[in-house]
Image 1 (cartoon, rainbow, N blue to C red):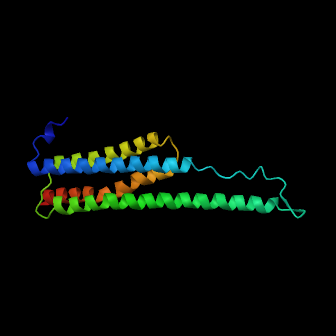
Image 2 (cartoon, helix red, strand yellow; image 1 turned 180 degrees about the horizontal axis):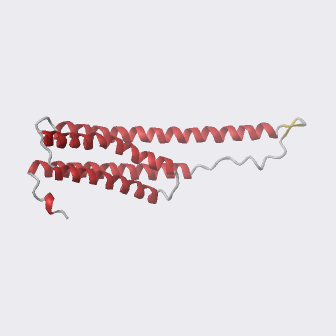
Image 3 (cartoon, one colour; image 1 turned 60 degrees about the vertical axis):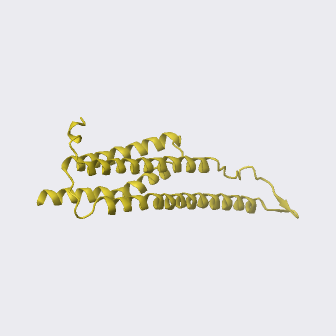
Length: 177
């Protein structure tokens, strides 16, 4: 299976190795942030307002006001959880974008020629890593917070397209020459 990749030149093998390390970094970030987000969201227990029956202040029933405050606090905490997930996504974006951009600019200069085997390997590794990241993130988060898990994988997958599309363009440029 890997026999056709043995004839890649030295720079192509180095690019594949660095690409693999960046993919592993991205998978690690997605899994780690999924664990953190699932712990943060699963530890949140909303206030129960069903126990509020009779709250009398100076003879007047204020149970409706206490329930309303409970609903408001639950809404604020849910909003806080959404802001927390967005902050994690921004953190992941910065931690993924910088290495990918440096690798794209340094690894795929104008003079670089990409062979078909390198392009196919890069593309296949991208799809396998995205699927693996999604499945592992879902497993370690115990299916708590499925939307953040998907978003953490999508963030690095979209940024990794910067490199994958660059490899594709270099391959098609070489093929058309």
